[in-house]
Structure formats: C-alpha cells, structure tokens
Image (cartoon, rainbow, N blue to C red):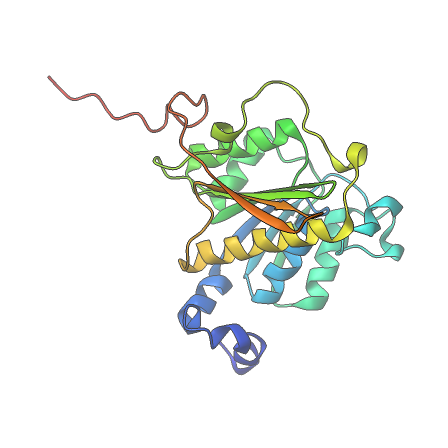
Length: 255
C-alpha cells in the first residue's frame, strides 16, 4: 500500500482484527453485487469506501423518481440513467481506486454461473423470487459465499450462506413454492431500513474476505424497525434440500 492508501484506510487498519494484512485482503477482493437498488446502493458505497479492490455490479433497471427515497447511490439528476452507471459514478467519487464493472443486464443462466465462479463472494441485493433462488443455486454449485439481505415495510433480514457442505443454503430457509416474494413496489419500505440491511451485508462481506469475527452463517438476523428489536433464528441444513443436499452427500465407499 502507498501512503495515500495508508491514510485513507487508517481508521480500520488500526483495528487489530484488520491491520495491514486485512486491508490488503480487501484491496485484492472481487465482490459481485447483484442489484443496485435499496440494498445494493449502501452495500456498494461502503465496500468501496472500505477499499474493496473490485466490484462487479449487475442491474437491468434505470433510476426512477420513486427510487430516490432509499437508493442512496442515485441522485435527482440521475433519473433515466442506468442504475449500474449511476452507482459506478457515485462509487468513483467516493473512492476512485476501486475498479467497478457495471453491467446493465439481468444476471442469469451461463453468465450468472461464470460471474459467481469468478467472484470471491456474492451479495444478493435483489427483490425477485426466481433470481434469489438462481443466485443461491450458482453459489452452492461453485461453493461461493452468499450474503443475502431483504427489506420490506419496517422489517429487515440478513444471513450468510457460506458455500460449505455443512452450512444451510438459501433454499434450506425458503422453499421454492412458485409464489413471488413480496417487494417494495407493492408493499412499501421505510427509507433507512434498506441502508441498515445493506450496510450489514457490506460488513459481513468484509468479515468473510478478511477471515475475522463470526459471520451470520447458520443464523438469520431479523430487524423489526417499528420496535427496534433484533431477533436471531438458528438455521439448520435441510438434508433433503433440492439445491444443496445433493452436493453434500458422502461418496459411497468402495466394496
């Protein structure tokens, strides 16, 4: 690291859990963020500010006036601009050293598998039922850690599915019923909630990259914003999970 980097990241480098070694891991990390909305905005900005070296951001939407209440990487003059481009520009203003690849596209199919395989970890910042399960399946296949967040009305949740055979995956928590998940467009969301959950996603991602602390693997963190109460649910691996059970079955012994 050069002198400017040492100064820029000095307040976290002084933490014994981070130090020079942890900061260098962040600078070398490649994180895939899927969704540049309410959750993806704060997550991308904090990861960039913290010095994550490379961000790959996917979103197929444009900035709308209704987004500005909570999607903090976009500004009024960005209305009509691709969300990934608006986010990239804001990230570059915060930290021009971060490499950002912005792709206006719904990430799916072969491209999803390739991007997940190439990333150190993935942040799911979407609100689409089918997309969440596709991301989870790709992360299970490539054993890539997944940080999943959700925010609606006054309720938020976040968990880590760390891609190991012993840990549960997103499909262990939610079954694929074919019903669409509730989203902000239909149910509303209070503005700061997305910032809280997106920031936690960024923190969990940094802990995974640096290998410090205890991440939310096997735990679902729940926030009731109306009462400001946090609750935690312990998650167990579903031994019949259609996504991850087959990847973790022991190999048959030879006769």
